[in-house]
Length: 319
Image 1 (cartoon, one colour):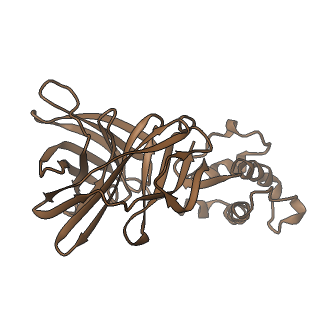
Image 2 (cartoon, helix red, strand yellow):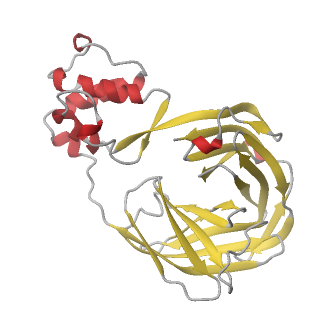
Image 3 (cartoon, rainbow, N blue to C red):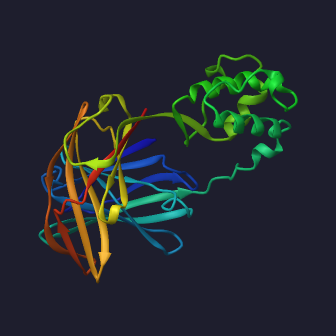
């Protein structure tokens, strides 16, 4: 995961350009501060920020931003859909509150470069079948894949040591698509030359994921995490909303942050917005406030309400 910090001005013309590659997944995030006439960040307290982008194929997509009300920063994820079509994306942020106030800020362009598809490159290597067989076996078990005699593949002496080391690092971890797991010198095994290139081509990186809180019934009370948020690059909070659906929010640099949890429901030509604010400090997460009010979004009736629809049921930290 990498983050780009930008500033957009509410009273001036913006011309901010960021670059990404087509085909990327869950790896790029933009942190945006919105500047007033005095070059100060406008307050995002009691406000919601939505990100809109028109793709080169003419389709428009939108994502909801995560709000940091302490630093007054909105974070948007460049999802796989945002980066699915090479070309230039024209972007706009819409900031609205419960009093029917809507502010639009534009001037961000995302240049999406064409990237080559290496998804089948592993099939051209002489040891592709061997590597695939061993890696699939290692993913199923957090233990070592075993001795050479326990496997059915050929030419095992060039593969098993490195895969066992990768598998050991994968204990209590999720395999998430990100980037190359590293260079040859980062492994301790011998005879690595025939395997490290193929492993890098898999474009997987091991990111350690830890469950910091879990409660199937959910809670609206103060939560004590099993470890401090300061020890994690980002966190995911899973929470119940209407009709027992589960939503989740990603929070980057989570320690000492105030986060808005929200859901959007469309019914009877009305958009219902529900939100709650939680504070993350070390091992403690506390509920702070809820919002209510009526408004419109793109000409549609819009209602924000403080109904008690959120119940946090799981928190996962990544580092």
